[in-house]
Image (tube, rainbow over the protein chains, first blue to last red):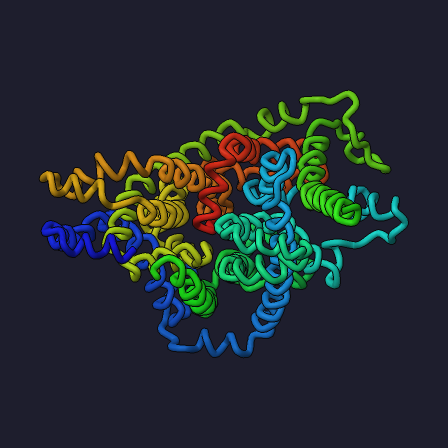
Length: 303
Length: 277
């Protein structure tokens, strides 16, 4: 590494190469323009709207922070936060555990590994709406295949998404089914990049598979596990399609997370001002977590 | 020696059992989806459920295209996803190159933030903007909003790829008097072709799968497939065969692409940790 750095310093044209660095900005200008128009403009405009009493039609008087104050007293909003936290914990922890387990399995050699891995990855590539509809049919309390399977092995039938006490665990199950592969792929990428020497030494010392996992794989792959966890955290907070299609926040409001409440407020009740205020709070939350992701990621990318 | 062999055997058995346990929920789900779509209504609502369609029927698929006008929606989806992916490549590949070369950490951070922001949070202002511009009911707003998903994916993957390329070849070109644009076009781009492929596939898939933008912005004739399939549910509550067939039609292209391009997709996802929406 230092040898190449030294030769670069010695080469006369190295400085010329560095002078180009400024011009590389030009490459990003078209994309930056689009990002500004389609991404940054909406952000700024959302903050602006959140300070107004903004319905789709009629006047839009300035109300200051009233929308934000309303949030603090809005029980539906506060409950949505509680549900989002509960749902998020479930949809981060379960895929993380299963995903790491799967990554360890797929890292070892066995017959048909490629095929097995492709099949395992299919759920996360499939169209979420299509998947959610099939789950809905499987959850049907009388005719659904899941209750048939439960009762045929002697278990009591579940009410799945049709009862407020089981709806969130059921949705967590669907999301786990769909997003465990993403965790697996990230962690598998980590395992693939590990050096072989520690394992060879451990095998010579007669270590068991569990000991090797616990004392070699886990500590070395930990940065990848952290990246996967933060990505899963962000995606879990953003979950929309699955909940919208399967329950639309129901029964009642018992599966109404922040994202669903946001949709209802803005596009069912057309209360755009209040909806924008929720977006701002939601966005700040995600931004905070993204910074966390960037810190974790930066350590490997821009050392 | 014997104990060692026993342990090995146990390890192998445990591994195969784990793999079967991990893979079977996915396999059984898709098999059940296929089964639902190939059965008539009588078998689909039978209890105990009929597992293997006997005889299998394609009537549900015919139904989907005849009664629900899925041909129009398929064309809409194709137009939107291809346009959004093409535009994203045009904008995102050079941008990824520029950011990687200039080591512009801040620009990369902005792209990352764009990628993690919930799609729903762009929709309120964009919805109003398209309404003012009188564009609701055309495909243009859909293509533009899909850029929100596709551009960050492409830029993010390309940054990773261009960072991994050795810079010596381009430097040599620059020394020989090429402009940086020529160095990019004739040296870096051909080397990054696998990366561009990955970016294209993933951006297409996530655009194809997107539901939320269509739900808000699409009119009756401009629905994309995910929105269309959702509407099959709302209007025909319990007709499971057509619903499963419609769901299969929507997701089949993506599943096929995954099966055919699994190496590229896995590479891209491992590098980027990308998810759309």
